[in-house]
Length: 79
Image (cartoon, rainbow, N blue to C red):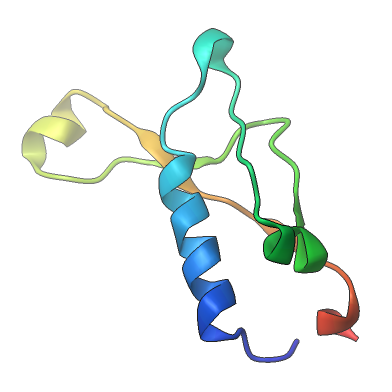
């Protein structure tokens, strides 16, 4: 894989924050930019990877949020 451009890295980072909470009905959805769609595809069938972060209280209450997305590379970027 080629090195990510700074702009593409920023767009991917924004998506990680956009996926933290599900829509009504527990469905996760993201709207990738055209640049991201050109290089990656995302399968949210099972939602994002989740994790618990924060202090002891967050761990005690088992508060989890969307934590990461896994994208499959596609297009000329990965040739």
